[in-house]
Length: 218
Picture 1 (spheres, rainbow, N blue to C red):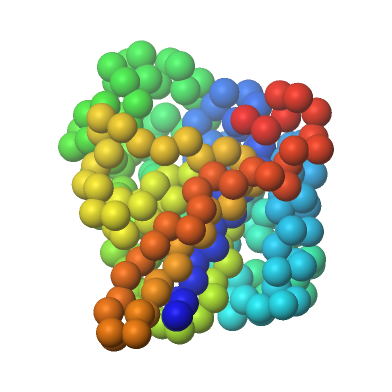
Picture 2 (tube, rainbow, N blue to C red):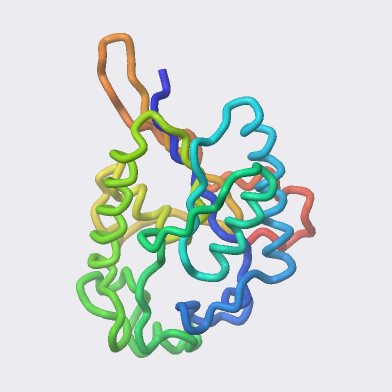
């Protein structure tokens, strides 16, 4: 029996993604036209599911691309999108708005390359971000025991969920691809013996994007 379910939708393509920029709060200009279409496709798929088995609540992180993704989902499912600061992505500090290739060159790698070292002045460390995100997700799961949650999030939040529920640590040597507007689903199962276990039902599901032009599902 499935008790609690978490369904994560990564935001659609954002302008900062298209421009190759670090998309912190100061730089995020929201979704591109393609990004809107991607999330609308995910929303249409989840709307049919919602009619059969309603979601309890819809949460979105605070950055503009997440709020816009949450609004698209909210309209399709007739739910209120609750903006939750705990679902924000990493703090980028002085890297906000700079080209990712420049930031990674100066830091000698991306955030995971040196997980206990900031990648820019005033930024998180990768382990610091994971610790904060995992703690928030743990508390959210406790708060919503028995519920079905839909969450519009960053790719890093999905990685934090995997790190938490699979016990993967920092994921510095390996990781997961998380495409724009992909669907990832975690289910908490209770078996006939009273044993509980989290199962990853699907990761990075982009079947709903198959009708988009080639190259439009990064």
